[in-house]
Amino acid sequence: MMKWIRENCLSPAEPLRQEPPLLKDRRLLFCLISVLCWGLVAHGYGFLNCNFSHDSLNAFYATPRENQWKLENGRFIVPVYRALFRGSFALPWLVGLLALVFIGLSLYLIARMLKLRKPLLLVLAGGILTVNLSVTAQTATYIHELDCNYLALLLAVAAVYLWYFYRGWLPFLGSTALIFLSLGIYQSFFATAAVLMILLSLKELHEDADVSSVFLRGLRGIGALLLAIVGYCLFNAILCRLFHLAQPYAAAQSISILTSLPSLIAGTYSDFFQALHNRAYPDGFRFVLYAVDLLLLATLAFALAQKWKEPVRLLLMAVLLCVMPLAMDVTFVLTQGDQVHELTYYAVWMVWLIYLLVTFHPGICPVSRRWPRVVCVCLVGIILWQNVVFANTAYMKKQVAEKATYSTITRVLDRIEQREDYVYCETPVAFIGTGGGIAYPMEYGNMHRLVGLHLNDSIGVDIPFDFYNAYRAYFRYVLDYPIILCWESKWWELQSSEKVAQMPAFPHPDCIQMIDGILVVKMGPDGE
Image 1 (cartoon, one colour):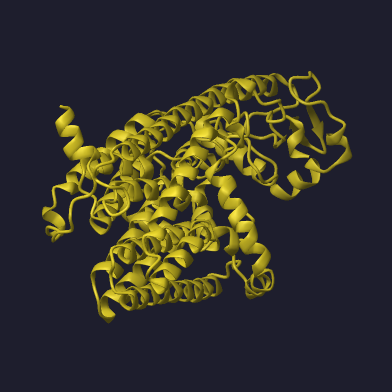
Image 2 (cartoon, rainbow, N blue to C red):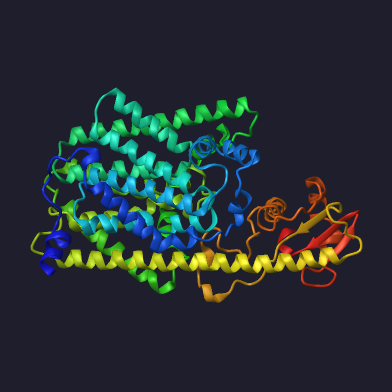
């Protein structure tokens, strides 16, 4: 047994050899099974429970307004994908299964590009792609987009695959088109494509590939990325003009980015470090992350030192390593630090994949020394297991919040129906705020710092106006109760009125009052 582990798991990568045909490679099935196992262990809880909340409550069913929202945010491929493959309902198990298939296929393409053959490396790489805070936050709060977003990942990885293995204008245009489609689903996986290009260039440079050929291939990759962005922006602008939609990205914002680029770049490196050592993790666990940081930096420094006799190669490798964190967190620059959260950090977690690659590389870690690889496997294993525990805890929290919300809303509804001034299906009702102002239970530790997990109820949202939509969705999709909500303009007027401000919140007996013919229910202070 120990001999098999040494030969198949802890020995360095095998010498380069010709890759088998794409569909005849046995790693395809292995990668899919690896991701499926990781996904079920970490996210099965979320896939098997219908705990819609936050944005996923509003998008439980993809209404025309939801599709319009996607177009306004530049995600014009999403309505097409849903219509062709998944339907308008966000079905947790189906969505989760599709997402795992897309991640498994992405892992397979990455394994072919990086020439990963050892079973242990494939299993750990599958864990890195499947069990991280991005997938957890997505499943817990934005599960309605889970499969769509990881289709964007697959398209981005496939674009890099074309760029890496094929030459000529047709593969170049194909790579550009795939990045364009990925951007049209979810823009953040552009960073994953950029990071993979950098990583493959570094790998070839360390393996003594011709510097000029690597440099020219890198320029071709940059060209594909830039052309895809330009095409995406132009197509999106035309689409918004045709359908009279608000454009999410204006020229003035582009100019603003250019003028503040130095400060944005500095902020990106700071944000990258904070994302990698996320505040949602338990405090003591960060020491493991610091250990990975130090060991990775030491290994990379040793790899660079091996090329000190080739200054041009060394300089290019150093530049690419310095650019890597910027590429991983490029969303920070593109959004000027706004709307950057765990869903946009997927490329950041590839740091752990880099640690695996450099530790198992025979040119960096000598064959005779197995202890660095043992340490690497242990540390990455601890990170992955911590993420498994974190994910299941997050889904448990969501389920507790869902039950608490159900209990609260049914109690409120019972009070409403007992009032003499309420007529079923006739009296308009306005809900103001939610119960999310309650102090966060300390039993969940730092988990409230993860996007979408800082609220204590299913109706809680980040944008005040979304309270109106959240209540409408909750009564429609969860309670299936035909409540008549007041019109939106009146809701805005009420939620900012002095009369409502002076009302006590639920569960006070006077939390429900008739104001201007509207039955106002003040649920909490966070709608003010």
